[in-house]
Amino acid sequence: MPTIASSVVPPPKSWDEFEDIMLAAAKLRWNNTDFERHGRNGQKQDGVDVFGHDDDECHIGVQCKNTIGGVTIKVVKEEIANAEAFEPALDKLYIATTAKRDAPLQKAVRLLSKDRRAVDKFRISILFWDDVCQDLATDDDVFYAHYPQFRGKVDEARVHDRALYDQLTTLLSSKNVIGFLDQNNMAGFSFVQAKFEPLWEFLYEWNVPEREFLSPELETIRNALWKKIDAYTSLLSAETFATHNPDRHTVPPEWEYEQPERFWRVVKSFHELAAEIVALHRDLVRTGKAQLIAAG
Image 1 (tube, rainbow, N blue to C red):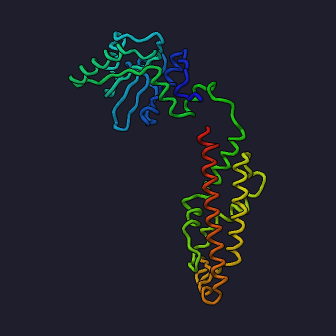
Image 2: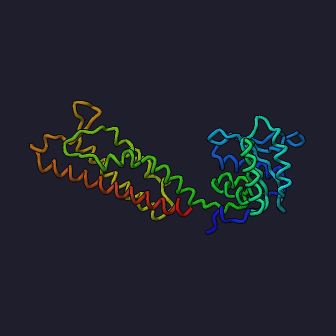
Image 3: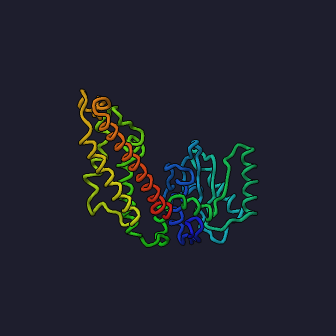
């Protein structure tokens, strides 16, 4: 399946659109929203169309050339001369062009940049259309904002299931209640009752048609998970009691001596149900990743 990065993306027809695209690409390339277009049409721009800073506070300027046919080293030198007047002074100037990569031009620009660095003047580099497209391809939303025609038909079923998956894995998280189930020893040790609140929420709010997955595999797991959590919470209600601290509950530790058969039967049931819930949660996460994330 072709990716955005491997697609043939047509360059813009207008200079204004190219500057907008270059602004978006610059924010992604330097991972910094501190970039903006310089001035407006008709104003003197001193050789810079887009400017901003990278993470090292390097002052960067970009001159946009909507020139599909290419850029000459003479034009590069002219833009350098223009950018010398930009204030505050640049640390690096990029010439961005809609043309394809040109090895002789890249070499000429490298040598020119080396000579300028030797006399403590801003460095220069060149960005070709392929470079700009690769920057845009690092963020789907940014890319599709400029090229909506590349976005395929929305899979409504997948969108529906992805939203449910995100909600469910946030509610039942390995870092919280699922991890607690996996590690907690119910053999007479007290626990904070509130730790199990996500289980009760799942029990009461996730057995309705609106919370059913359209994917048969995910729905089978969700249904099995609901039944196991129903059994676990029923056991909590019937076989655990408040300690001297009302926020904490426990399987009564005295049962180990007074009612050993009941004690170990209850503890075993808790641990077996917990293991089944943890395993179903793992299946849910892995199936969801395969169907809703990796497949997308």
